[in-house]
Image 1 (cartoon, rainbow, N blue to C red):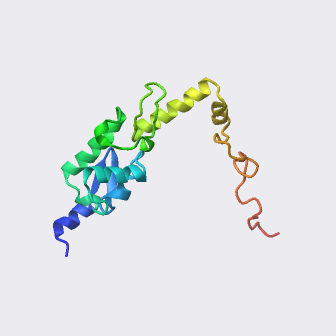
Image 2: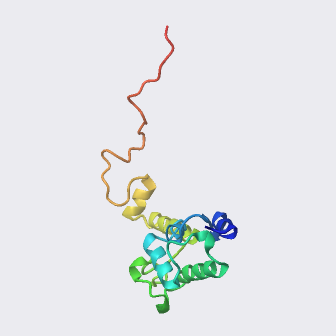
Length: 163
């Protein structure tokens, strides 16, 4: 049987890296709710910090939450060797400005993506033109999809008034 305090902890909402996560969720899928943390990175965080993946997020102590936050934030500078996270898990390898492998999380990731798209538009690259036109950037076919004036439910007629 669970005690009352365990139930209270599981019902609370935990804030990690400016994202509210329900306390009932397990740690492994809960961390993926944070923008910039994938399933693989979530697994790596749990393993490196020694946190059980199947624990509820609500049962984490403040120290464990701080460890997760600190571990995830460190990637914003440069990946230190002591983290031992493989380079393929980083979301910005060979960054355009610095040339280093960094990992961005949350609003930093959104801002950087926006700046990258603006840069592509400014230099008028092929990808930039595709972004400007609102077309798919990565080579998808456009015959059946990505139609700008596509009406939904074109073959369905609504019942009109009878004369």
